[in-house]
Image (cartoon, rainbow, N blue to C red; front, side, top):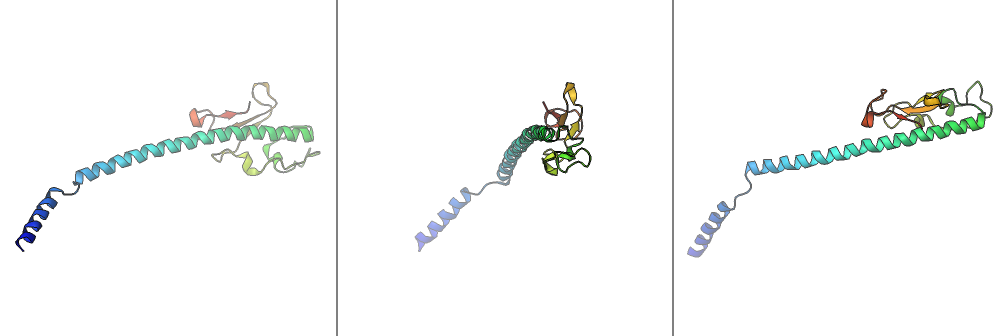
Length: 148
């Protein structure tokens, strides 16, 4: 009986020495985990913007191809991008579309693609995405993407 009591006393003394984490240690670990998550999230979201820029470049080029197909079929450029979706009421002879869906004429940020006839730099037409901010100019993901 005496040994049992001695073991309990030794066990409780050992338990006091092996206390859990302090509140400060827990707070530091939570802050460290939060910083890591914030860093990872910023990297992932930044990758999303780059992916949208690449998608916008592809959409601009695809729209150029659709305009060229329209011209091959009708003998003239469309008056507006909507002519790729529905046959124009005037000058619609030879129209074999639809060449595009309405959503195909929006960039990844939901802004309408711009169509200009005559185009920039002596080109017959240009197609432009205004980037993430949807306004002319800008840099990085806000830069304009103009057809080549």
